[in-house]
Amino acid sequence: MIKSLFIARCAFAGVAALALAGCGGKEESAPAPQPQEGIQTDAPAPDEVPAEEGRAGDNSDLTKISSQAAAAEQAKGVFTRARNGDPEAVFLARCQYCHIELGPGTITIARRLGPEEALLANRTDLTGDYVKTVVRRGLNTMPPMTRVEVSDDELDLIAQYLTRNNSEAAE
Image 1 (tube, helix red, strand yellow):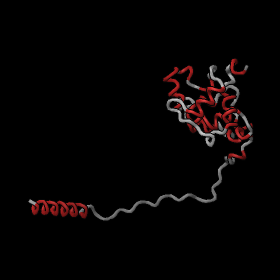
Image 2 (cartoon, rainbow, N blue to C red; image 1 turned 90 degrees about the vertical axis):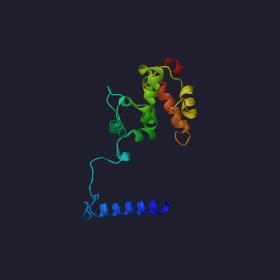
Image 3 (cartoon, helix red, strand yellow; image 1 turned 120 degrees about the vertical axis):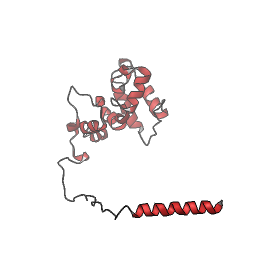
Image 4 (cartoon, helix red, strand yellow; image 1 turned 60 degrees about the horizontal axis):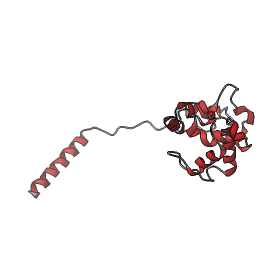
């Protein structure tokens, strides 16, 4: 029995070797293209974008962008604005990845509360304490964010931005 298994395995190995040998010579693939040095783009470095250049027009809301690439393109200069203390820019820099239209956070909120409540930037019922608690402790699929991820100063600006539509929170 052991001898027949050994012969069968050797026969299989021999057939496999013959099959591989019959495949022909080794094909050569084209070399991968190498990045060209010295190519310059017209886009300025992120820190060179003037603060006002990244702002969307009056009729545009950056949180209603359906693709991450489109959001990144429209939000040029957002990090410069965020460093300058612009509450909207801090929200965009720290939260838009999940909380833009069709972002995972927006989809989760829409499932729980309905599509009219899904975009955080359009909500009128948020309070500063609620925003800060959810960011620090997490809620459902949103993980808690540490002070390394979002500083206390940034969190204050995010809460200020998200409560701007709530007249009761302003009092």
